Image 1 (tube, rainbow, N blue to C red):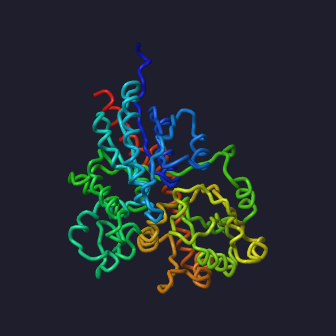
Image 2 (cartoon, rainbow, N blue to C red):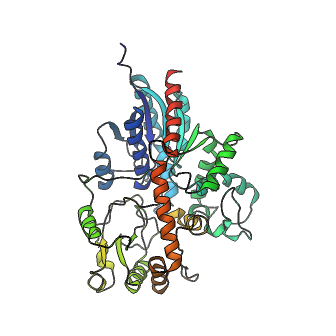
Image 3 (cartoon, rainbow, N blue to C red):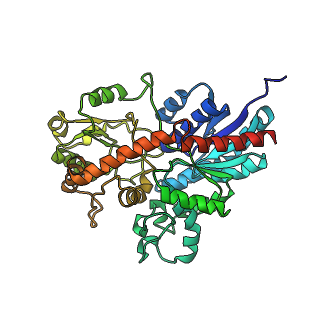
Amino acid sequence: MEGTQQPPHIVILPSPGMGHLIPLAELAKRLVLHHNFAVTLAVPTDGSPSKTQKAFVEALPTTINSMFLPPVNFDDLSEDVMVETRICLTMTRSLPSLRETFELFTATTHLVALVVDLFGTVAFDVAREFNVLPYILFPSTSMILSFLLFLPKLDETCSCEYRDMPEPVQLPGCVPLHGIDFLDPVQDRKNEAYSWILYQSKRYHLAEGILLNSFMDLEPGAIKALNEEADLSKLPPVYTVGPLVQNHSKDDDIVDGPECLRWLDDQPPDSVIFISFGSAGVLSLEQMTELAMGLELSEQRFLWVARTPTQKAANAAFFSSLSSEDPLAFLPDGFLERTKERGLVVNSWAPQMQVLRHGSTGEQKMNAVMLVDDIKIALRPKVDQENGLIFRDEIAAVLKSLMEGEEGKKVRNKMKELKDAAANALSKDGSSTQSLSEVALKWKTHAVA
């Protein structure tokens, strides 16, 4: 009967980790609200979902269907396996469950597209099997997308470890990139994590399109170069649809949210440094101590989302829930008391509205190059080459320069410009809004084909 036809159905498959779940969930909201799609968020797991994941999924609008796929088994993996390997194996071992889900959906709904993130290309085969269009939502920067698209060629032509390359790599539209600043999981080419990253990058061309969580004014050179490659049919079309960031209402249940917001309301405008390393970023005890002392020495206002320090890898918390140990107990003696008039430390998630942020822990060196050398919206502290630490004096100096110096003033002014540009991109007639509308039209056309 006319008017009762089912809306086209999109399945969104995030990789494990809140940093992957959030932008894909934000995409789901836009597809439902602005384009009248039915959307299912299917979340792979390697065990019981964390409290944070459950709370996040339960807080999604009721118009978005969500489900946790059955957990996969990792009894055969060693504890020291890199997080990228665990992510890719989670996706691979979830394929039987995904196939069963597709069988159900194709029989009961009008399933037209699958959207995965950068680690989900293994699911493309299932999508093609059911005549469903596969797309990638790339949650990071165009520079990192360009690097991954270039990686198969680099793998063939370079015989040494990338950190030992004598010359930087010149990606189209990007600033030169030295091997030492490449992604963490490609720094050891003998590690299984490298093989997985290479495997994923070789499959990007199988996508019908790549949705980039960025906007035109952020990286115009790199985005233009990607579009030119797409025009030459060397790449799937790239659509800038970002920034896809989580916006909270007053009624949202955010851990420590009310305290953070009340404290921020009492501070002068543009006076607070926000310190957060995301859902996966965990500092060593030594680096946590240096950061605390650097904040104290800088005499700047700060809001710090602290995590319990670890002696493991920097992304050791990626698959785990929040530690039961209080991270505040690991701060230097007297730090909280000495900084209580100008700093706030919280030990969990905080509202991150209006924050321009990209990527995960393993990408931050590349992001630093982009933000400092290309976009010029950040300052980069010097790392001690002997032990890999950034010492307190260096932290204090960079923070003072950012908040009080002329160089920092330029950075803050550029940030304000980009904040306005991001808002424009997401406006009714903005570039990101139009790009997503273009993709939505392709999906609806496929639905009636």
